[in-house]
Length: 433
Image 1 (spheres, rainbow, N blue to C red):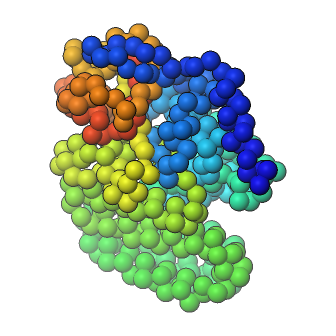
Image 2: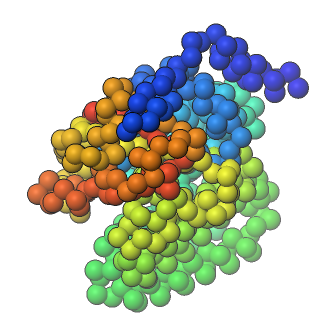
């Protein structure tokens, strides 16, 4: 009982010792309470103490980003997770990355198995292959050392855009707990045993894609039967949780196939629906509060980020968890980030100027703070109830395209519960391999 009270007592004592970090500023002719932030000071958690009462009792906290390559976004999200883990009892970190691949990161943060760079590479997303994410993973590993199993932090991916990650994870599991059956299992995987030939992104361009889809359906049926028949053997060898973690890769294969078989337009909302269900699965498995890291266009609650305006992941999470889901979006005024220069192109640094006048970020920049959080749930500011433009940049950026391709009109209060504004951003630091 005393151990359980310790984090809360520490939280309360720190809160009482610090000066009140919030301030009142005028935004669009309305006074608002804001909480100034220092995103790149990732170990200074004191400034987040006032947010504890807002986030401590939530089940899922989703944090977005307005680009996939901004240092301040990544560092601020890492800082928020550190705070939630240290003072608010959050144990599960999840990210928009290949589920099967992140199991290697999970083994690293839990047990120090393998090395951090190899584990990160298995996630398959260049977006997270940065020094900022590496620093967070190393912090999680250090946090877990010496702690009881139930208090350790865990690392999950919830995305479903890969055949490689889930297949590799299934092979790793069978290799560890069923060496005698490995050759037969590899044979049953058929074409996915060489999954490098069937890249998720280009599979539809293959002239024989329908035949490949049919074969993958057969492989999924094979793996389902295989794990069902050997359930007792595997649970006795690995334990139930690790068995369930491995078996979920079959669901990840099914989700990836579902996305590729449907139209490109429909696949947007299918992907978000699958990601939301994966987060629910993680919560149901662990029975612990979940931190979810993704783009603004996934964690938002209103379907306005995609051109077809269908439901996005945050809307599904809102349906599942209700008020226990709290999401925080990011907006920025100007600055640098990394992105691909075209689909399948080269990763490089880009810089964008201040967005159009009278945008959401233009109004926020007039508050005079470089970075701050605002609780939209307690705000009555008309600015957040109107459709306003703000940057919305994903994995690809082509400066030759019109500005509106990379800008999105949002009604902030419909999309987000909280908003983090950063006036000037810098580029995330890619890992040099």
